[in-house]
Image (tube, rainbow, N blue to C red; front, side, top):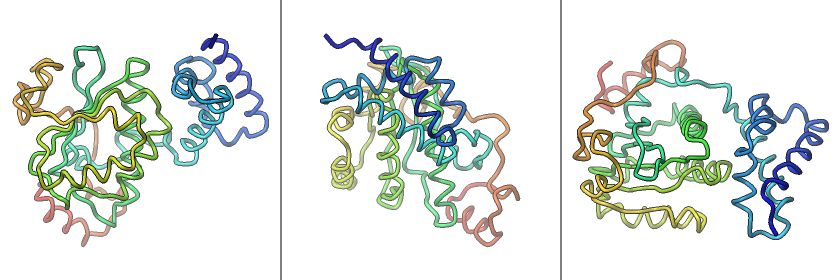
Length: 266
């Protein structure tokens, strides 16, 4: 019989041995989580439950995920390391729970813009967003609600999309469902193309719904007004700074181009 708790303890012991050999490959935050938070191991054990050599596969997946976090500097960045406009364009915030108790992560596509000058910063932002909701939701997990109304091909960046899909492999069993709302017919073929890059488990989490269907799973007070809900304000992190701040080391020519293109106030 498969004993999850025993497997967790064995992987935890193996990870301590791994640390002796490769101490610089892991961030202290992740080391502490592996030592003290069963979910940080359990999620990989359950995700690979039906694989042959489950324990070995789960252990390697844990190490791979945490090595990636360290190498990509996931724990080195905070909310204020990203421009206020990134938060506003994406419509990203965490507000409310669904009927199953999962946290709700909101986002919009129509207002997204992509620029070569901020390509790497955008990827870092995406990694930060996933780490942020993953840690906040814990074993409870979260659902993602994405408003696609008015979106076009110009709002979708395939390089970033592939990056995010690959990154999700390091966060198994956290995301419970993706609700795509108001998907334009013109984007149907693109969405099908993107789903081709998803693993089977992730594809089964994707749903396409109308705004009115959201009230069946989420209280109206948490739903943004642009999705027929009662909430009229995005929840922005505190102390985020504008893109034109010198901290981001961007050229003035690009900054002007950014605000003209996005039609955002400077």
